Length: 145
Image 1 (spheres, rainbow, N blue to C red):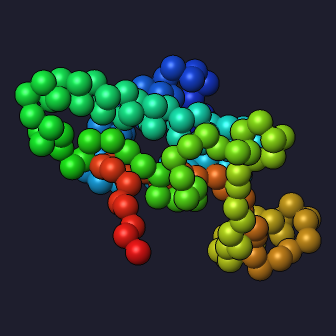
Image 2 (image 1 turned 180 degrees about the vertical axis):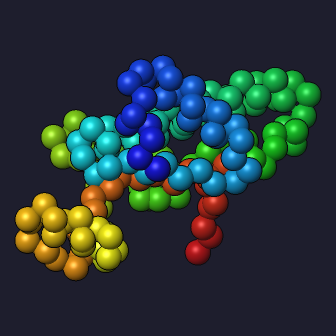
């Protein structure tokens, strides 16, 4: 968490996220600060993983279609588990808004002591904003009602 924003190059971010995805057995969670920049990074990585896996799936489908349709593995592809209920384009990307959430955290005694030494008003909690995406390998489950 909070690492991708420290990497200045989009190319390097993509390389790292691809490596993380390749090392992932099932679920990958990416978390960045809940700022417009952090949200933008999450949106870029979300788009890239979905694009990359769709591309792989299309290529393997063409190859396997010639041999046998059953050869496509269960883990082929990717879908978003959270916070989005879909794998389509994020509706916030061009809206001027950004995707983020707030979590209230209790401050530790060392944080309270540090804040007190700065002369700032002291609260026993802090509201932390973050942006995230959770991917899962495989195809999105289909619900039958």
